[in-house]
Image 1 (cartoon, rainbow, N blue to C red):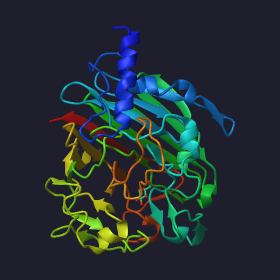
Image 2 (image 1 turned 90 degrees about the vertical axis):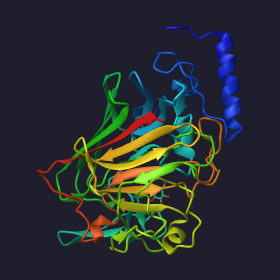
Image 3 (image 1 turned 180 degrees about the vertical axis):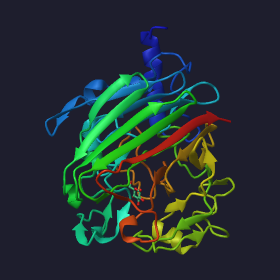
Length: 393
Ligand code: BGC
């Protein structure tokens, strides 16, 4: 293993300053040699001390996972991915996930979902209300009149217990108390992050409850496959293995219909750039301010999972394939990003400089009888897994 010299540190600092300029042609060059143990600039940027703190009386830390291909930083505050480093075709590590460089930024920022574990119910519940076994429950609305991502203080704000059994695995546990955010039942949740031998980040979720409840867990990483801070994602190419999506109303609540994507800007059955049709006149695009919709996965099986999406970074050639056991995926392309926050690369979180592919059951499922159910009962085990696999072309 090579030792980092002072001159190398200066080069690294210069590169970081350059990336803050957000020149679209500039990739977030991370290291000379991928696959070695050499510390990348992102690792030096993410100071452990900026993540060591106590929240709600519980210790918060930054954990690094690493295998021969990937490196990933996760904090147990919100069970969130802070950095995800994958090599491009030249072997340079690129940080493809958006995040902040300190816990303070995560706590203070108005955008609280970067990289986070989302729960108890991902995406929207209309007016925050739902009935289960004849009882009506109310979740505090936090997105106009609707509840988004588990209400005001969802799982992204919780400190999870962390256990790192080996260098490529992190297990996070959280027990959400009965009626937290208005949801019934004590829900015991376990999330396992791991780096697999075939270049994937695997997320595995388990939950049990002591009262009937609703559960729809996901991860909310914002990706830019050219590297955090490298500009728009509109030239990324996207393929979604979905013939249908769930149209929404103005508040982004599904109408209940499953609409065929054929002949619409939502047809990503073949590769298309994210931006090629985003400005077309289309009611659904207008409601979402762009893409912010759930796609109904065809169920194209690969290793026992649904192949959900393939995305290619136009500048880096980095490819991300998403696989999941979930029936749907929320494709959100950063329409609400507003340059209000400074990211770990020094860049701002500019409009549409990241996209999310959140594997999930469909939004507003508790109120939509024809959607797959998200009810979990005592004695049942909620179990689901998703993988984000990286390669390059
Ligand atoms: C939602 C968006 C929301 C974003 C928040 C997505 O899952 O669908 O409407 O703005 O999360 O980061």
